[in-house]
Image (cartoon, rainbow, N blue to C red; front, side):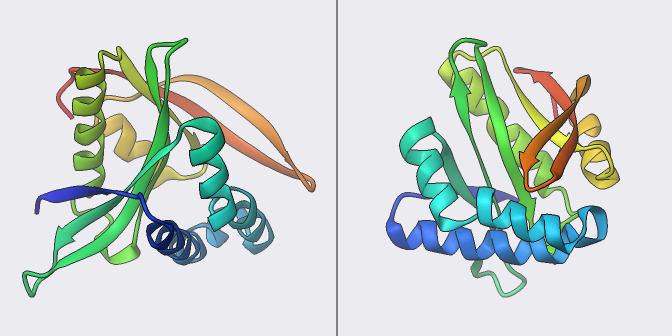
Length: 176
């Protein structure tokens, strides 16, 4: 099933992506990081104010991941976003999140292919992301699309919470 990437541009889009983020995070992350850290992460990194801050202050771009449903009508199946890093000639993929019924159906691979095209169009040498070390589904999916672990980091994000992540990188131009 092919997907389309619809840019998040309007205030309504930003509200919609924040609602989508809360839904996805609360269906996936509590089992891995607990409800308290999930709530903290949503409030600080996946909320309307966080999306608006990242877009206005840090050059983030966001897209809805849209696919045709069984009825042939387009439906939002997830969201993705990140920003260019001219100093490293890479694109930082901050977010690839899919609703539960749409995981494991090849959409993440198509998101990576989208970023590969974006990197090549913009003359960037590659992309990178961080993924929770205990997110086995994510780590496996990224390795399967050509990402390799280049570092392991623990980041204090406040309120006693730590992000325990792998940093994974992929050069542009690989087949996902």
